[in-house]
Amino acid sequence: MKFIKYLSVAVVGGFLVTACSKSNPTSTSPGEYSSATGARYGEDENAFDVAEYADIPGGPGLVFIEGGRTVLGSMEEDIAMTRDNIERTVTVASFYMDETEVANIHWLEYLHDLKRDSLPEVYQAALPDTTVWSNQLSFNDPYVTYYLRYPGFRFFPVVGVSWLQANDFCTWRTAKVNENLAKEANGGGGRRGLFGRGGGNDGATEGAAPSIESGYVLPNYRLPTEAEWEYAAQAMIGTQYTEDENQNNRRLYPWDGHQVRNPYGKQMGQFMANFKRGRGDYAGIAGSLNDGAMITDYIYSYPPNDYGLYNMAGNVNEWVQDIYRPLSYQDVEDLNPFRRDGYQDAAENYDANEGFHSLINDEVRVFKGGSWKDVAYWLSPGTRRFMTQDSATATIGFRCAMINAGSNK
Image (cartoon, rainbow, N blue to C red; front, side):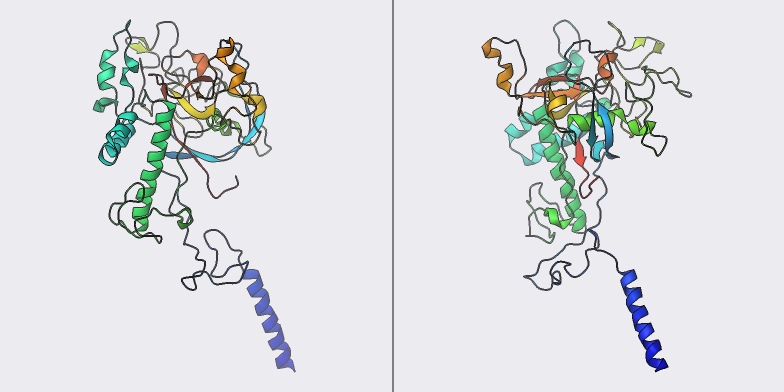
């Protein structure tokens, strides 16, 4: 009887240990059997199969931006009296963003691939408008020829690109990055075409690009939404010193303080961005240049903000996804706000054909951040301007963003 008693205790104890050691299935460790049907994954060719998956690190060039609650809106005096970005509290989900603006060398790589793999008209459509440097009343002619292609400008921000061209670049970059991931999945096999051409075996149909379910595909590179861009530029994480959710200081610029000079350390007094200090003053006087750049500057110039992002103020303005509307601040949702079209504020409300003097329609996009040619007012993350999506200037570039896939944060 004692033996049976001890055996019973041992069996029960075994069950307890098993129960305690049981782990719940996760995305990276789903187990061998379905927790819904009990069927074994991939048991035969007709069975549902679950591909091996490990969290893929963020895409090349990206920095993780932890999301959260913030107050968006302009803290600057509304000098244009547009009242188009009134302060409001929103929550922005975590995402990834390029640590720098897209540079000339990146665009040249893009052009190289298009010239090799695409129709001539596609290549021609991707060429930046280098004539944005040309002006009848100034001598910037050398930049027309040299700014994009001269090696010394390789890591300067690409300019002369429209919102439409920037989106096309994002599409190409997504395909190129995922092509490289597919090569790694194939053990470094032969070259795969950008859109599924070429050989290789990724567990799907031979010659096809990996599926989303394969785990070897990153989400799309894209332009950030205006809310994402403004949130990342604020970098309020740098003011979060306690665990009680209090942020005691707002930021007028992407750095501490309400001035454009560095308030700390050995760099104290130096300018934090590349901008136009005053009428005719783009860089200061010889021997004592203030921001040190008369036009654009090296994409890693000036200290990064608290998210590790460079030049979120100055250097070049940056395209964002949103269509411009003056009332977006009150119309859009308070979780991941975004305006993709004229919903609730149709372009007809601004129809210039009806005698209104308006440039607002469904083809104007927001740009933010200030540039080498702008005064300090436009460096504040809450300021916003707009331009038609097929236009380009020497003061607007862009950077890419990506969702934080597989996370609810």
